[in-house]
Length: 180
Image 1 (tube, rainbow, N blue to C red):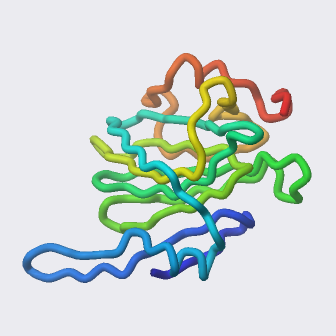
Image 2 (image 1 turned 30 degrees about the vertical axis):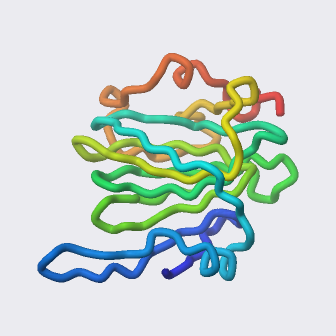
């Protein structure tokens, strides 16, 4: 596995070694010892999976306080633009984001430590999105930031009229208005 720190401390791109032949491929998608050697100790407790179609945008979501979550995300099939936004008030990169294309083809993964909002936009006809988390989901401690907040300035690479988003995400507050 190749580990690359992004410009945001706490967000890493992981690229597994993929062994392909006429039968298909094999790769290690997660190896605790290797992960901890490069990134540090994280105790993942749950794996999640979602399926979405072209134009679906999920995010920018996070869990607050003691329910904050670190995530390791990857794609089984399809392609997304995956985004992490630093929402740590005392961070020198507060409000900055990183965007990475993840796909079933490139096999990249993104590790996002606690203290970041996360979202993704589906760029293929369909996507199967998988992720590990290190804490339980708490609906009462869920937060979100508006996906098209001009101050964050994420370049979502499809026409805004093609974006499919939930009412909750459409009505999320701007980062500057969020009460942490």
